[in-house]
Figure 1 (cartoon, rainbow, N blue to C red):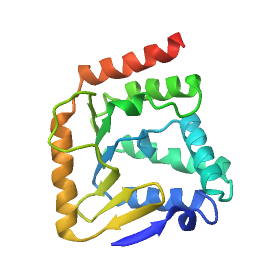
Figure 2 (figure 1 turned 60 degrees about the horizontal axis):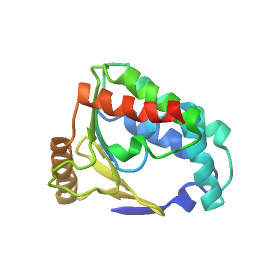
Figure 3 (figure 1 turned 180 degrees about the horizontal axis):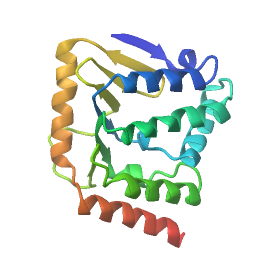
Figure 4 (figure 1 turned 90 degrees about the vertical axis):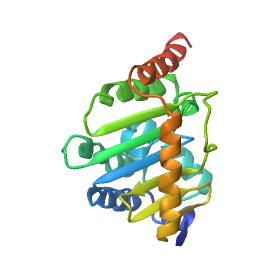
Length: 200
């Protein structure tokens, strides 16, 4: 296990870390992602990325290279279309409601999610508020095949390489998938969140 503080990871700005993550994703056949707080990075629109990274940079007081980090982060979206990778994503419903950026930024983000749902490379589930569940809401984590899990908390990124712990995260992900809805139900939840923004 390695523990890397975000301030250390971002000490020279955010661009380098985006490139490193992209390379890791390129080497991964099946990426499993659970997020309880924000839209996963490779599904974020430029406006959403910029708003989020500006907040992060300001919070940690690290060098601001957001202009360079945004295209580096959104470049990951190309992997959704190359046919060589599979993405299994589960998010909590409140991810659709957490306001990152203004209403226009969030509306663009939600419309983008609707546009990628039909992709054969992507499985996208949402755990509705009030869902019966076997696993409680967790910190965001990414499972890169069965090689390692990357777990994100407020102050650090934790790389889990112990096989028993990786298996635990895999089992947790399977249970979170069971609590999620898919297909038309996902479209309905995103459309409902979008409707709130368009009225505001």
